[in-house]
Image (cartoon, rainbow, N blue to C red; front, side, top):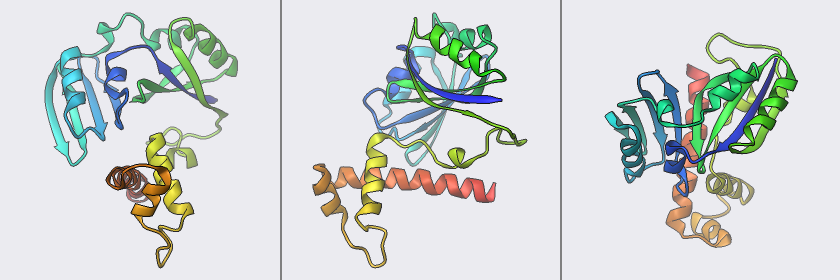
Amino acid sequence: MYEATFHIRGDVAYEDATAGRDVDIELWCNDHCDLLHVRGDTNGAVVEEVSAAVGVEDTIERGDEQIIITSECLRPHTEQNVEGYLERHDCLLLPPLRYENGGKLVRVLTLDPENLTRFYQDIQDSFHVTVRSKREIDSVTQDRPLLSVDTLIPELSDRQEEAVVSAWEEGYYAIPRETTTEELATALDIDRRTFEEHLRIAENKLVGTLVEQLFA
């Protein structure tokens, strides 16, 4: 069995909600509505754009995370859907869809690697597509189909990754610490508070994912 992850951009509403923002959205489709897990949206901008596209039935907020239940499913409101291309080339979608950086991350499974190639070639006519990863897999689990080292590492934005890597390399996590957030921010030519926000979100994602895997 083969798995590939594609970043696909096609001007879909949920994609637009993440464009230019340090935010990501996970979508779980329920046919009649969508359940969205939003991380990083602190100003309500995502809720506003989702509401304009398909309506919002309810929201639950916790810190910088939100759960949004939409009034309708997004799929009927889009002219071209990824699912049609997947069906055409005998590929399976691994939920959830993940929206970030003005596009969506699509994880695809198939038994024949040529199906992934044909899917990629076909969908490029309508979308801007980048291949993030491609690999062969030989095991599955009941709860998490692709439990591996890759799944233990959450998706970080470029700024979040830059912040945590810089902190590690410069000794911020050493005991005792060898640098400060002020010095790290200066080296990256950004405001200290902005740097600390990127670092805090990255740490929250990394630790949260680790705890989920250890104690799920």
